[in-house]
Amino acid sequence: MLKKKYKILGDSFKQYIPISKNTFAETKTNKITEKNINELIKSFENRTVEIFVYKGHKEDEEREAIGKVVSLEKDNEAIGLYAVIEWFDESIT
Image 1 (spheres, one colour):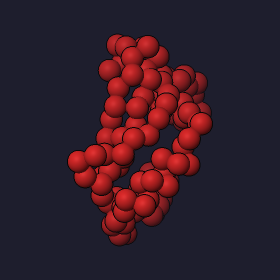
Image 2 (tube, helix red, strand yellow):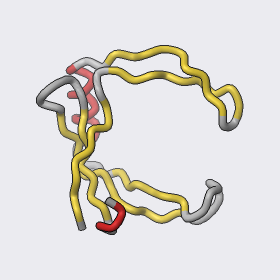
Image 3 (cartoon, helix red, strand yellow):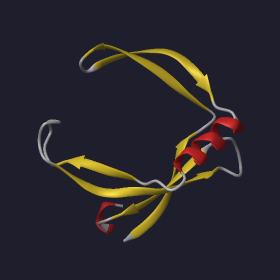
């Protein structure tokens, strides 16, 4: 299994509201602080999150785990968050 680190959050993110099943509208930009990053990392301690992919195009179809998030890390260069993902199949990366 291969572990890789990906940046998943920067210093802000846009918030969207649903208009219909597959349509969303942008509302506002939320700023991320160092405190937010620390809270996210702390809340993730002793947990893992599996990453799934659908084999087809519809959400009611079968899905299979392709990896899992094993840890979260602070960005030491700027405000941000990295996820360390363990891929079950190295060909995915």
